[in-house]
Amino acid sequence: MRLSELSERSGVSVHSIKFYLREGLLPPGERKSARLSEYDEQHLRRLRLIRAMLTVGGLSLTQARDVLAVAEDPAFGRTERIGAAQYLLPPHIQPPEDEVARREWDQTRAQLAEMLHGLTWRFDDSSPSLDSLTKAVLALRSLGYGDADLLRQYAELVRQLAAAEYGGAIHPLTDLDKAMEGVIVYTLLAEPVLLALRRLAHEDTARRLHDGE
Amino acid sequence: MRLSELSERSGVSVHSIKFYLREGLLPPGERKSARLSEYDEQHLRRLRLIRAMLTVGGLSLTQARDVLAVAEDPAFGRTERIGAAQYLLPPHIQPPEDEVARREWDQTRAQLAEMLHGLTWRFDDSSPSLDSLTKAVLALRSLGYGDADLLRQYAELVRQLAAAEYGGAIHPLTDLDKAMEGVIVYTLLAEPVLLALRRLAHEDTARRLHDGE
Image 1 (cartoon, chains in turn blue, cyan):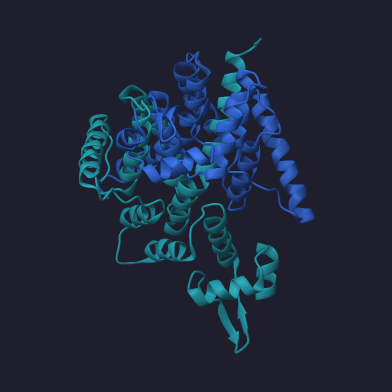
Image 2: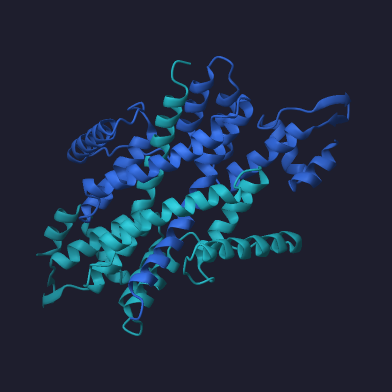
């Protein structure tokens, strides 16, 4: 299809598509003449993925490009590529600079890693998600919440979720492109789905408990 | 305690505390003289909550003030206050302006509400979380993901989570202040905990599935 049709079918303006082509987020079409290139369904799919990363995922252009670049880097194996892409996705939390706060941070981070490894979770301790977890747990604990029992309960339920998502939906995708897309989609785009459902579930639970109030 | 001690114990600068007092986020201390006010443990707790809302929750000052104001408005009953506070928490998604996109939006939103009500979930259809859900599901579907089975699976697991959080941790808090705090904490601060755990669980699941690759 031509650029105009690609624009129409994706709902992305010709201007934006040209920008993504220039910035290397979208691979070039097949050149038919000096002024004409041909695009296919892969371009359409990639375009939708880019839009989803930028709008729903809230990634910057640079972040989106980096994630797509590592996904296509032939120097890495399949698992490495998928892992690298996940690690590149925001947020990336910096530990505190203050010495006392840093000690508490390091201690909490090590405790959390130990707790999860104790539940037989396997992950690299350099994971940026361990930093996000540390920051959030420290904030919870500063207000007297976030005890170990609740965390274990969260971990148990979230693991069931991940097994359903990863095992059922991502792993069977033998096509690396699709598997990468799956990781990006399930990591980034499914997050607001879960959070929105959780708030609705809170309202439902509250109504049941306060019924007749 | 004096302002300086409040600052020391909370880790929030005197300058910021004065700002929160001026902006009405923090109630005034007990006035001892023209230049001296006395603060108590309630102030310390509130200060920690404000900081958590701003830094971990990512709320703006205005948003934080609105949430705290509705929480303290005696014109509403307990359940209403808690619900209103939850509805005020970001994100707030606007439906698309384009007419065709808007029709798809309305249709999807109605379908999602129907699906959840069909699972006996009780919530008000004006909930902003239903907008967030609609946006995220539309993005997933534009890439060919987000089928109804997965959504139902998510809903089931998330409901278990909400029951554990709300039933076990928020409902027993008979003190309204603590219950409000619980809602803010569990809605806002527990979200990054869940998301971080989920990414670690994805890595764990991937490692198990790809073992020996």
